[in-house]
Amino acid sequence: MGELSKRAELILSLVIKEHIATAQPVGSLTLVQKYNLNVSPATVRNEMASLEAKGYLTHPHTSAGRVPTEKGYRYFVEKLLETIPLPPSERLTIQHQFYQVQMDVEQWGRLAASVLAKFTNYPSLATAPAPPRHRLKHIDLIPYQENTALLVLALSGGVIRQTWIPIPPYIGGTGLVRTAEILEEFLYGLSAPEIEWIASRLEPFASKIALKVAEIMNALDQRIEEPIYREGIEELTREPEFSSPAKMRELFRFFYDDSSIRSILDETRLTNGIQVIIGGEGRWEELKDCSLILTRYGVREKALGVLGVLGPMRMTYERAISVVSYVANLMSELVNRLF
Image 1 (cartoon, rainbow, N blue to C red):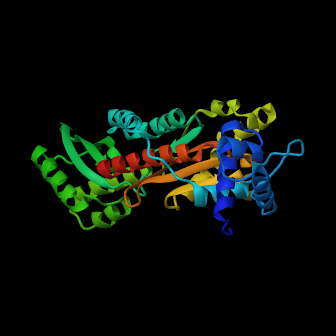
Image 2: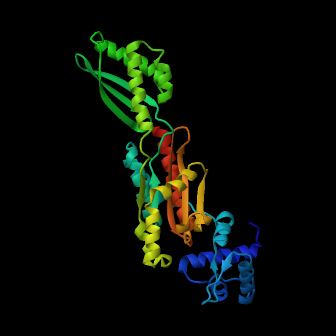
Image 3: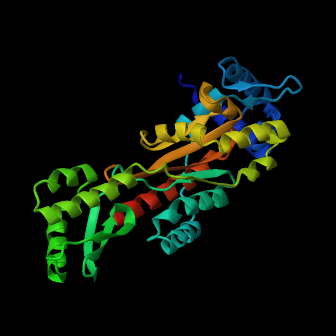
């Protein structure tokens, strides 16, 4: 993408900001009068014509005003956008909501989607943080009856699992406590494959328990994909781009189609920072009138999730990116603390 002159960048930026605010084609006279430009409408009109020739603007046949193209929005987002931090009052409100569920990992994704939709007024989506593999954090063996004990596991991400296990008659309460201590000493922080490897080097009863631990963890690692939490799709019905029921139905199907959304989220997990998808970028036809702002959150070695918002191409990028970034940073801190 080539560099534009400072004046061309100013005109492009003002056209985009005005179109975002009004959803109408923007004329040169409007820009001169509203933004007190120290040039004539004819000069602005020539600059807009040049931007149109380069593919940054276009104009509807029924209007002399211009509207941004995908290329224009892309230039704006990559080179001209200035994000503004959220006001302290909003940051505190969001912090408080996450503080209330900070120990309940299963609520994080649902809350993130709700917060994003509320503070951006755009449809939002989020996944819960998923560890690459669960790792053992703590193990307990609690005697119950003469030949039965309760195996309790605490895993990364705050996951707790428990199951009844048979115990040999020669293992008493003291033996269970000692076995749990040995297992925690050798297995702490390990994944299921690592525990399986260690198990063969332990004495028979401890080895049997270690293999049971690995079995439970393997089942969790092979779980069904994390759910995708979604909120606020009805917000798009307020936008003129989606006034057509047919267009809204198409977007609705895409938004709630797990396979389509996951293909985008999986790419985002591999990308650092904010990712802005504008107009589907030739890959997602359903997004041809939309922009999607996504980002990864979490810690790569511990757990990762994805969150973001969907809106029209003329979405308020500054505001949306600020909210998405803040929520992602907050959730990354929670992951680092809990995992």
